[in-house]
View 1 (cartoon, rainbow, N blue to C red):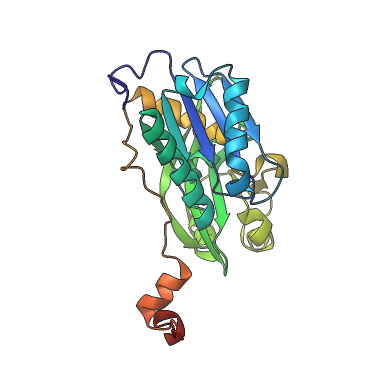
View 2 (cartoon, rainbow, N blue to C red):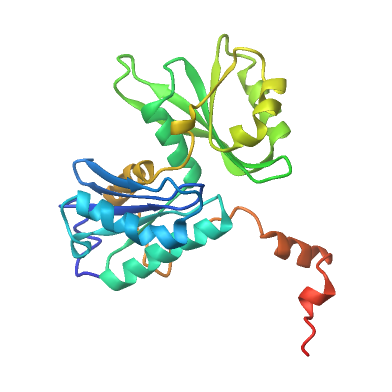
Length: 272
């Protein structure tokens, strides 16, 4: 690492953030003043081919070179297993090559932050980022939306564990939490809306929820960068070999292997 990289993190910071956990890849550079410079792909699941180009664009927009970066942050999951691996691996390589620290950011926390900054109405009680994990499964978290009296300051406070939920169980828990609040609204974001919107509509009381618009529904490196800036200022940094993916569950093949349902031909391939 650069000499005194972790001691001087509050001065002249330029953090690269990488987002590859969802449909669309993006990269952002944020400086110590909070200015963000971003590049995003419009192609779905183009992370492997497109991420280096996006990084180059974001760095160029920031008016710097890669050698001037002070940290590299990755949206570490949950989300697409392949996407997570691409983002974390890219961040680890850049950290090692440039000698700068890494920052791990929860994908769900970043999604909640993006919603809070850009879309959540003042009357919302909870922000719920929901990522489709298939077969009625989700990766989700629940955050309380907290506003100051003047509405200028706002924060998302976690109130339920980030983990894998069955969508029905998540919604029933939300209903129970909301029972004591009159006119409370839940703000849903994430591609879980695409997969389970009709289930949400069938379980949640009418008027008790709002869906994020599609243009703000999905992951973006800008919100990863904003959280990374706070983490860097607090000294929450990692070495490249400490940055790890957060899959939140085993891959399907690993689950089947542990359950003993993986085909013998996969476990013991025939070699001709």
